[in-house]
Amino acid sequence: MRMVYRVLAYLVALGVVVQAMSMVYAVAGLGKWIDKGGVLDKAVMESDASPFPEVAGFAIHGINGMMIMPIIALLLLIISFFARVPGGIAWAGLVLLLVAIQITLGLAGHSIPFLGALHGLNALLLLGASLNAARLAGTRTGQHVAPATA
Amino acid sequence: MRGRLIIACVGAAAVLGPLIWLWQDSLLPGTYSVTQMGYADPGGHGHHAAGGRSIEELVADPARPADVSVSLAARKERFRLPSGRAVDGYTLNGQSPGPLIRAAPGQLVEVRLVNESVPDGITLHWHGVDVPNAEDGVAGVTQNAVMPGQQYSYRFVARQVGTFWYHSHQISHEQVAGGLLGPLVIAPPTTAAADVVALVHLYRGVRTINGREGDVRVEAEPGQRVRVRVIDTENGQLSAWVSGAPFRLVAIDGTDVVAPTPLTDTAVTVAAGGRVDLEVTMPADGTSVRVHLGGPDAVVLGSTAATAPPPTRRPASTVDPLVYGQRAPLPFDPERADRRFVYDIGRRPGFLDGRPGLFWTVNGHLYPDVPMFMVAEGNVVRMRVSNHSGEAHPMHLHGHHAVVLSRNGVAATGSPWWVDSLDVGNGESYDIAFVADNPGIWMDHCHNLPHVSEGLVAHVMYEGVSTPFRVGGTPHNEPE
Image 1: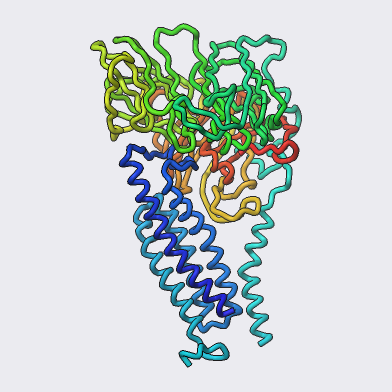
Image 2: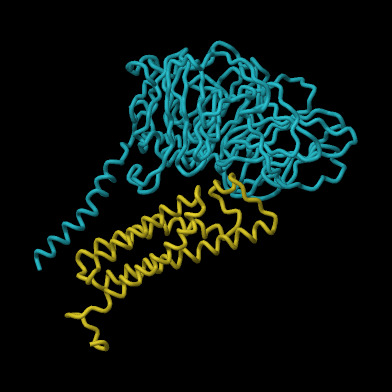
């Protein structure tokens, strides 16, 4: 269970990395497309088509952020009840809370762009919290002590 | 050890339990009638029972012969746009957009729709035309989806003069995007002005005007008046602007604007599903005029031998129909409303038919817990449409045209602004009014079509009217 907790916590951290990369990939593709004469307006934004290939980055950001990461964070919390990681429940709860805040900030940023800036800041907090949760699950003393650190 | 495990299980159950309950509570039955969905909202009136005459009786005069007969064969296929680009989508008579249907006012239009090869079934909805309810083309509400090998005839009298369009209302978010649509113009056969239809559609992300990429050239003489009928078939609003000559915004959603004034260096926005007619008088010196539709692509009016003028950027200012044109009396008194409704759009996380996500709410509730706006024939109806969902919503009421009374509490002072597709921005609130003069069961939904499958739909329902058609079932009616 500790190992599952640890893997899930690392998956949350990996998810943050994917989020950052996918967003910049998409924005870079958008800039290139506009440079070649593409026009972005509401009609293009609301169509589910791909005017340029990097638009996949927006889709990845949305699916990963609003579907996959909440599920992983939820699983992390559930596993935390069984994993007996010191402080593990609290850190898993914090991770889930930060994911919820992150989604809220991301959506609210569409109408209040400054909240989008906080979305970027909160991503770093989430990365820190998930890495710390993973670290806690890896450094415990007891039955499963790693020989090198004993 | 055992105690810990029990506590852990209780903790897990406390997290999962509410989620599982919400999930199962959101599941929809396999088939249901929209008249049994959500809750009846009598709009301040006493509530009357539904039922009574079937919407199948609400048709155009069956004895009257058709003046305009059109046959449309629908196929799901890979086809070529006029530019040569191959697209996977839908065609009507082998083309997309489908053929232009033109009728004169008062003519009876009959359209025979044949489904040759669309596996999911199809319908046709006459967007903006206030047809009898049985001809409205909404799968699961006014008819069953027309399955492969089947056909269906639509009949209606073209009473309104203006620019309209038609599109499938079965799995509409997919079929409309794929091109199962076409333009419809109701106008007297002879007009002094040249008349150009400009149907704007994105095929898999590529913007087209009448299916063509790039400029559409139209021959126009110096001094000639030209009407450009812009149709936004997309899920988001479109900007149109004109360079090379002043223009007038002469009609919105198929209704003429009263005393439209000339405009320069100003853009016009077209709501998703909406239409605007722009009128240009060609410059006497023979120079061309560029009517930009969403970007550099344009209808270019003038001598087709001349070089097209270069694109210009979108002007910063936008026409506000709330103050454009001249005030004129309304055919009814909105202050003496019989029904008053609220259509309040929000957004929250939850489950919709077992699917987790962030969904639109109507008056605080998720689909299918949406209001059924109950009216009686002849009622004057007022509705406040407000939006605090974080995104704009182009709201489309079937079967009726509503007049905008105010926006954010500021009364309209321009020409009566009649709409069937009204873009309600985030944070905006519109008061609209209409006369309930077309009995039936009418969708009142967001025309950003994927939003409909995310729950942004309600219905206006007349007392004493029922429908035998059901969402789901066989054939699988899926109006979204």
